[in-house]
Length: 228
Image (tube, rainbow, N blue to C red):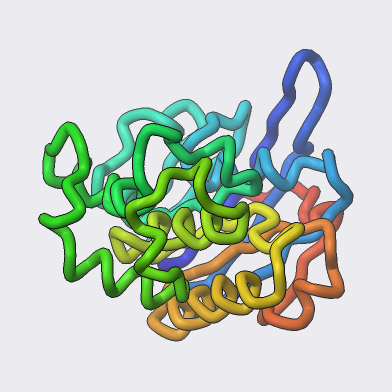
């Protein structure tokens, strides 16, 4: 699955966040996106994940064009399920009422029309996912408040991979994480890229991106208009 962003624009509270910005992330590749904090990386990933509507431009996922006016709505279910997102701050994106097992299997339950994840129903998938991110199974019954940031980030990585997405977007996925957790997350991303997924990682740390990405793109270099 290839991601194309064509002439994406965004302004908030009268301030331009993204001038016309274009980007291609080919299937089977890990691409790095670098820029200083506050330059618009998170906004671009939110748009690419269809969580935020741009002011203008077009998102093309697996050849399906999604104009700005349709982004965040009227999106084919098959497209949404093929997108996995790993946020920057795990504490802000984990439901404190769910155990790690329930957190990881929540997308599976939602896909199946269940109101609440029941990990036993998804035991095989749960074990596979925890192996992928090297998360100890002894932690699965714990709540977010009972685990470290690194352990919670691994659980959210497993959640992002739960529906076997073909497009994976990561916002500062290894900031402030220990080397073991960093290696576990990057290993999982390399595996998905080898299986044909398109992976985009945003970070302010260019040096770290160059170690595990196929290419590193400065956000400022993407600010150019193109025709959708």
